[in-house]
Image 1 (cartoon, helix red, strand yellow):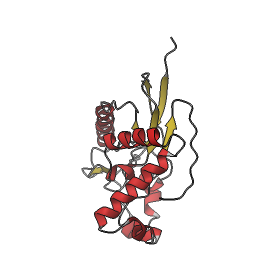
Image 2 (image 1 turned 120 degrees about the vertical axis):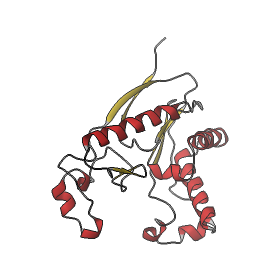
Image 3 (image 1 turned 180 degrees about the horizontal axis):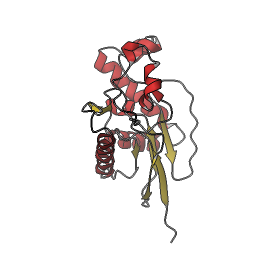
Length: 204
């Protein structure tokens, strides 16, 4: 019997951004191990900077530890080009973040149906368990619907509720000002069963 293995190139290692779909939330411990390894790596590379990781963010600013762009956390000269109010205290010359992904592979089980890939903003309002349950429930009720769009809608509903407003009031706020209520969020749900979902791009 041929085994199914998924290979992942991970960038966002201070957040849980990839889930298996058969409710094996033991993956949560896997992500915490990666998170711990990343924190140790950065601290070892910056022994003279006690503020290299603050509140689970690189230099207290960036949630991801590996990324394209964000040159201001890779080279001191790029940090120096920022306006003074946005500059970091860049100690030494070693980069704080890397553009090299961390590679891993996971052996899939027969019940695995999908992967959820997202930026960390999704997990400001939803837990791993909630994300998996929401996608699984949505797929059962709306097999042709877009589960990624459903997760975005759920996030917006949670953000609006926490802010004491309804969804349409939140959506009426200009995008720049909406950052006060929720982070920019990207979500992809990848079927491991060959499904293809089409999104309307509209919320509710």
